[in-house]
Image 1 (tube, rainbow, N blue to C red):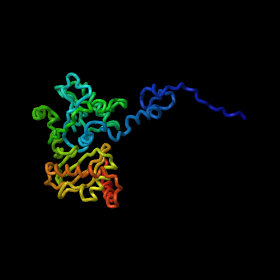
Image 2 (image 1 turned 30 degrees about the horizontal axis):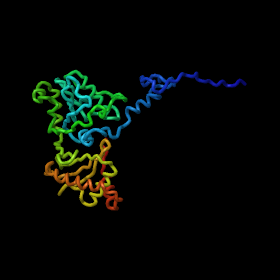
Image 3 (image 1 turned 90 degrees about the vertical axis):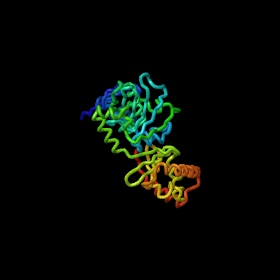
Image 4 (image 1 turned 30 degrees about the vertical axis):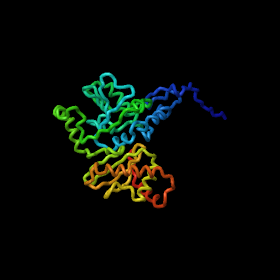
Length: 324
């Protein structure tokens, strides 16, 4: 009986990983493995692009304010300072919470640049996506928006483009008139922008940034007011400190106020207080500053949590919601 012949594949020349070009997902992988690109080296490339960066704003000035403006504040702008200075023909670069028609970026007629912060992004690294929009906006012809796209996996991040020593001073607005230099004239000339502006203003929740502490934002809703405070401290350490204060009855911001839980957003914790309807941003300035002092003391404590403090921590953790 004849023996069954064993078939062997011809040896294929291999290509070094660093030399493999990007091709279509269904094309043969250039490494000559015989598999499609998406099932071979394309898998690693896709993972590099989509892997979630938990703290995309880490290393930027005022990281908590970046988080607040991305997730909590309806209408705000911040002037950005570039490491290499402004290119010729670009008088300013401004970060905005939202742009008309949800554009990622906009080059105005005068050459100035606006970059939208609250847009959907194509990769897992928000900082890289925003940097890509910024660079493309700088090269866009004046008077045109910047289209959405997937940022290159090896592209720069905001940390590579922005000056670390540059000022970062959020300006919170009551509406979105900052979209255009003269809102009334622009609305008259463009019904599309007028309609977008009207919808955005109707949806905006009145918001005020406190002056006495960092990254704390008061907002007004029909049922009650709130204070949402983005904090830079390590999550476990912060939750322990909040639990100590809560168990001691020292976590409120005055009569009728209550620490009700927290958000987790872009790697930072955002404690939230319910405030009575009549309590304004000015009313919580002093209580917030006093709370910041109590929190600093609690953060410096290393003693194990008591049973009551552990229960308080469990309650705070159970009421935590992850935004991103």
